[in-house]
Image (cartoon, rainbow, N blue to C red; front, side, top):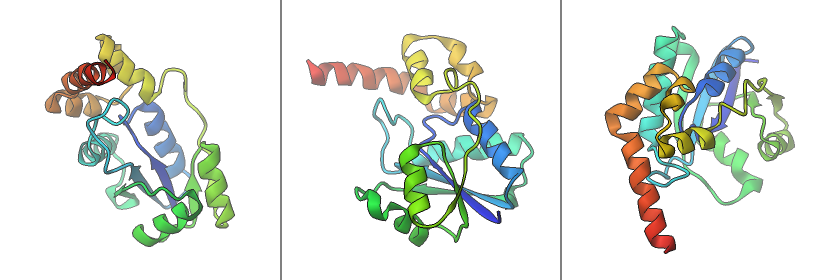
Length: 177
């Protein structure tokens, strides 16, 4: 494989994501990390901006010693048409010849366009889950810091990410009544 794309929201970038990236770098020359739902932030499901997520990924890979010439990180906004989503990626990303995912819909969409699929092994999926990590942050469980790389903790602390998430939860409660 020459260039592989891995799409994800990375809310936040956690150790499972890092394991997948390292696994993929052993199987391709270059990796495009597509930071999807780039237009979404400041919600319980998507608390971090695309820029914050890109910084989390970049700083983690720098600390891990990953050759920056082998990685491209690109923000990708959502479109509401699954049938043309891969065409959309083709139009806004550098050319790629394979895709990486474990999401059945994403795999199907890339296969329909003729791409080969790499499926990184799941690493402690029950622990390394953005939903679980965000819930731990909301509940005040500092063990979330063990589930993400150190640079991610630093970014989240610098931006007041935990406080943001808690404020968003309060706003959500008020809206739902």
